[in-house]
Image (cartoon, rainbow, N blue to C red; front, side):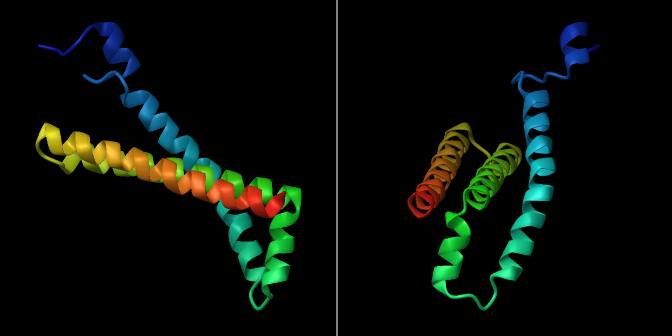
Length: 124
């Protein structure tokens, strides 16, 4: 006996109908983080020993501000997706699971918004 229709099995959709898109989004953010993390590490090493003004000047450059914003957004989305999987797999009880999932999204939005706001304040 099989679960679901043949079309659902081909599409890889589980009971929540979001398995494939969640998997895809997590992999896309992981791939996006590879060059962004390399850029971030190289930039951070170049700023070792620099004063505050040099770091602000670095983030004031448009390309660096954009890359930093992309890095932060990709990292926050990747973090939220990964933690969502952990919560869904290991949290027992629907009420507690729902609370944790909402807190996860809220925390991700809060961190992302704070970082992007700080970057905009520096860059503009």
